[in-house]
Image (cartoon, rainbow, N blue to C red):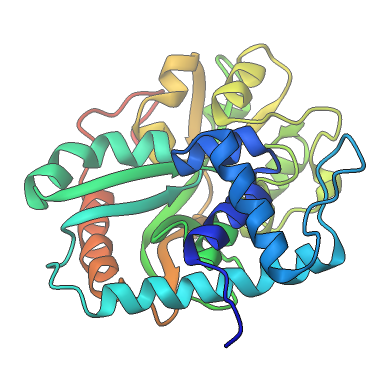
Length: 310
């Protein structure tokens, strides 16, 4: 009989691949670094191949390591689905790993927290905020159960359901004549010195696509890493921007001291959805979560802050 690697060894190895650091992978796995390192060496010995290239200062995998990483992700995903499919756990009871992109997390989750705890009192929710590409990778390898994402976005091997739309609004420095318009037209945006998040944030592509803009229409010298930084850049008069309405409803524009105005109808928007791995035992959980977040998105903001209600 061929000796087989344990699921624990594969979990440790994938944590190392994901974090590219023995210390960070050990922290994620809740074990000591020596325990994780020993498990990786045992896995290499069992397979008879070196998986991690230790000849350089920078983390890298050997060709065998890359092959094992790809296969291990599929094995662990199937094992996790097997365990969940025979569990007596009721929907949304116990641990649940939820990923959320940064342009949704600080605006939707605080609004949802109280109701979520009240509706699902036995749910142990663990949150992970990261960019879309990283969350999709974690969904694929089984380290996340679901993720709140913005669409369109290609999701091979994943299912998703839409929970609502989030319109874009125009934001400019206080006193800007352009922000005094009743509705901002696409032609207005081309002359507004538009600032957007840097490459890698899906909000950038969604805003460009929804407003039918080109990359040349955006001020290329500036790229913020968060909406909070972006609004401060606008406040200092460096340009204007497009913000998701959920962020404005949460007070982002008012807190930054910038003016907002609606975009001309039909208002461009991004779609918000909940994604999970195809074939997982989490479909029922995700359907319930999607229904809940759909209600939260439809609920009116407690207060409307900014130059005008949108």
